Length: 265
Image (cartoon, rainbow, N blue to C red; front, side, top):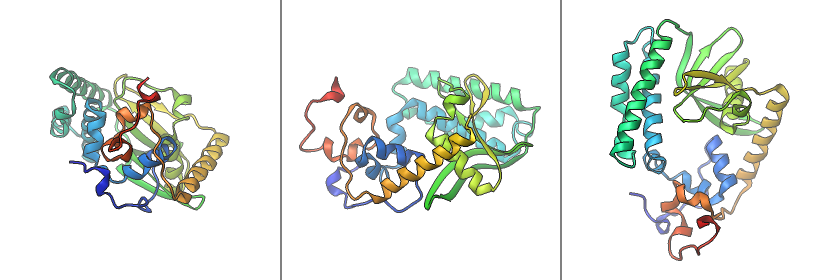
């Protein structure tokens, strides 16, 4: 169980490489950025609920599948067994959501296996942590799968969300941009970042021009410099607090409690 903030003695976050989530957290609420380092993944998933259970189980099943050679080598039954092994229905709001998301997960994986069983790919790595220095700051990102293609290294992530961004919209995603920059630095060759949207069953490659890539690099370095220079982490109370994974630790939500404000409107 998460303890109230009165027990926290941390004054600054660990000096570990920064992730896209770290940068987004700081921009939204510096206190959230600070506290997020002390929230366990399990506690974080509980705030995301059923969608987190679906994403984690489907991703874990596909990673396990590609570690054994992919759909061309792994029977569909084993892929579905891996999903069951990682499925945590306790994250769902109720039994109805649990039943629906569980069924959707199995359907997505069956369809994925059918579509890719006859199309082997050259996989360089799965669930790979990529770390690199950019502009004097260390960054880290994770690729669910890394493929070797004729054009470039393909850095891939799986998504189970209902909405699927197009190539241009995906190119505006901070997390995807960081994955691309860190991947290129780590592999020392051209790279492409993409998602595989499991619901519609299609690959979407991020559209990021060389000019836009340089702009992303400058933005990331500027954000990182701001984070590293910070000595104070104020709380930004707002509507986002309702679904904040750090709320159980946040001093704004313990005595004295925040006044009724815009976040309730």
